[in-house]
Image 1 (tube, rainbow, N blue to C red):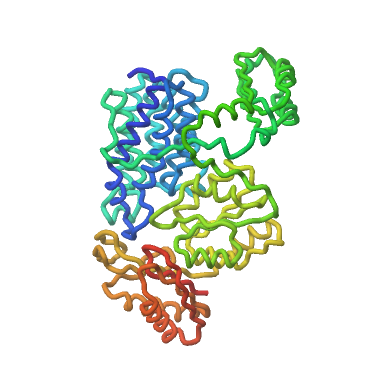
Image 2 (image 1 turned 30 degrees about the vertical axis):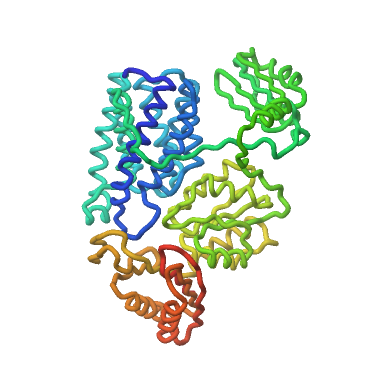
Length: 544
């Protein structure tokens, strides 16, 4: 394949999505830390699966439309750090393919590089030996060979071969991976994606496994609001061929005064506009100063709405509207378990996003929760290191001001909420909540999801695992042994306030035994026992 168009691009992405779905469990098993969590394979598969679902709905799309649809779907569907990075790679690639009808090897190399740039820009401290390393070296190789040969398949194959070499080297770049003797899971996922794309280029498209879960797309219901609710009647869209150096920002200001839902995109050649207004004539007249019209489309949204209601075949819930601000500040928090949710609600959290280790919420999940909060600024408490990046993508998808407090555990999120002052400013609360995070030590007890030799521990599937902070603290077949060891550590650290949240698989009697152990060993501390109801983690313990 020497070049590809929009339909070809869609095939490449569908094949890549199928490749990751087929190898999802292999990616999950590459996770070195043996706790049950939102695994890499699951997160990457669900992220690119969102793009596959949207691309299947497009009929003969242009290259720009196909790549933009994939980027938008992956941004909203991104789950976990690996999923977010995958979506960022696609966002950068889409940016480079914008306005193009065909993509050869030279443009593909530039797109791969643009994806890498977008991903590195978003990661504050990029580490070597990760998906970023694999993607960067693959893009560099593509750029190098494209100078000699612009054949698309040739360039992509070279990038894939370099990606495989880079992937093998991740074992040496990361001490943890080296000890476990495995490659980086995210990097392996990107290699699977590139392999899937190559198969499509060669006419051997990979098909998703039979019975594979797919992302179900829905359409909005139009009968739940009146035609009168439409403020501006005409959806006005046009593209202008730029013929002078007038500043498009002046056009943006003018159109903003005419209506809403304004989107204005410009480059050296065109200005593309979408706006809802009651006077499309004024909009078009003003735009004529900037150049000649390439396309113009004006649609009466009141008539469209009436037609959709009459033709609607099934009632499907519409996306929630953005709540009007009734207060300056609001908070949403991620957690799993009704007990933990009640704790956050009691502390003033406006919305709960159900999720955590085994079910990382997507950017779309977090966006919907943020939009429901009737506040101008909404703080987000991810309470998991694998959810922070997904939360950070929300700000550009909503008109609300979103501030992510990088809480890595539920106890950190609870401690942060104790510092929240609804009467304070956004800046004051950002500082207070962030400074509160290191004040609490978090302990967790869960089970080993697989056999592993990690950090000097010989771990067997089903063993109890104790985690202190982010480090493995101990493993045993007897949970009381771990509880006593943690209590001794807390006593040594001189902590005064201990709260034990017990999970859904722990009875009240079992939980009381845990509380008694801490009360006995930490005799000078105040020990509290609460039902958290969380899955997977038998105990979440905070110590301050």
